[in-house]
Length: 112
Image (cartoon, rainbow, N blue to C red; front, side, top):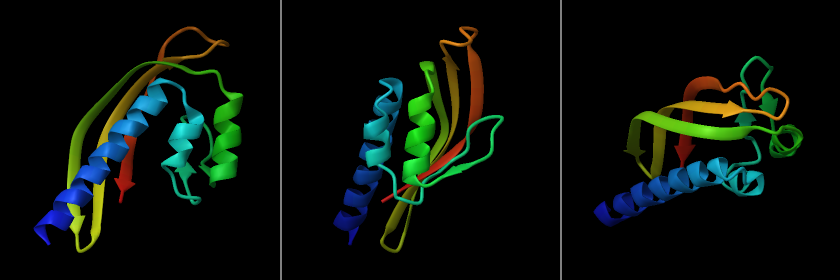
């Protein structure tokens, strides 16, 4: 059982690390490959975007350039056979339409 828990924790850490790398590289396909079909994306100053197809379309229309991603309060928990990570984030970005950097903050959950 201990080995299964260690493997689940490693998987969650790998997924989170891959997510951040893809996000920094603006690899939308890579980010969405890590998501379930029921993904919910909650952009700042806009209503939630729900579902892989809708999130893909939303992200493809943008031109955000990520400058920095900061992760804090990162915790991995295991409950029965489910491992999950919760964390707070702060992302600084700009767009072609508005080169002034903007920072957004929130929290996210990753599970395996």
